[in-house]
Image (cartoon, rainbow, N blue to C red; front, side, top):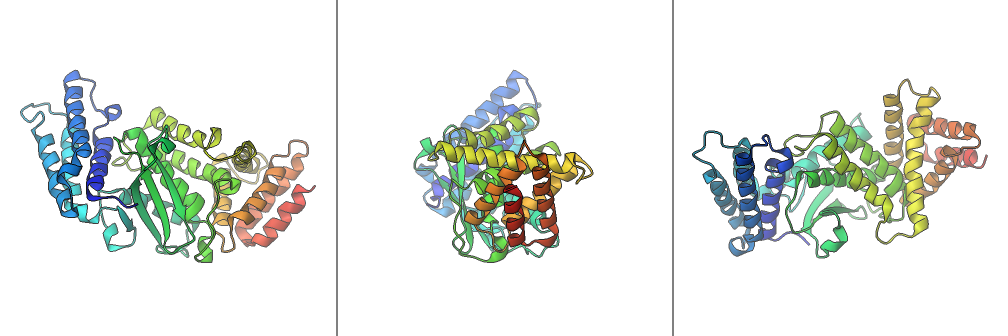
Length: 384
């Protein structure tokens, strides 16, 4: 499933185009500038699609990328107002060529091959480090535990990705845990980069760190797991949106900002609740209700004075969610059972005191970290 050399070259070229040449991020509306940027995009796209002709082995990738960089250099070379996008794309391609031996077709953040500043592994490393700190600010969950391995591949059934160009998957039943990113074999846009950021957040937050304090060999959560794919996916979504709104996302990877970027995140998120492949109607409803319950927790914490502000309520809700999901005894079946009771309690519109009691139980868990006690408390509250 790993990438062949020509596929690696193609993906690197398309990523470069999305990061530096996307028309939606162009610095000027001048038609001459647009024409040169379009010519550069065409150059990269043609290079990606025809890479198989010249890139047969790994050693062919670097010279091939440098050839494309030279072609970009020749575009608008004698123009005093040459678009900055062309220079940026050329520079990035040359940087990638220098580090191509470290490209993350298959690698880990902590391994020697992870010291790259060019492949997807760089973005994965930024997001992984962010989530590790959120899960355990005391650093008890040290950098390499659990060990995570990243695999990049092109889809053999691209229609399954529609209407998007990528998806992800995670296997936590093995060691190291494996995150797989699957792409459609075609060009990538700045919108797609936000979908990539979402995919990485989702796979890490929802799956990879599930039961992280409990060792290896855990069961993988099914697509029907409403806790994993509904509640925790909502946590992942909020993290991506906060990254965008607070201006903390790396501009070198995610140049698109503002309403267009936010819309890209929401469309990717909402697609998971509208008609996900392979789920029955009741499973989709459970996923949606889990999302609603996750939102309700922070709302209740804020409305009932258990948090001093809306932002603190969101932070406490996230801290609870990440603590439960990464617990040493966490298992997706057990978490689904807990999540079902939380839904009943937190979404109780008839007896609001039940929802408040459930929120208090969640808040208490942040301190005592006793999953069995939390399950018993929430079950009793849900039963009224």
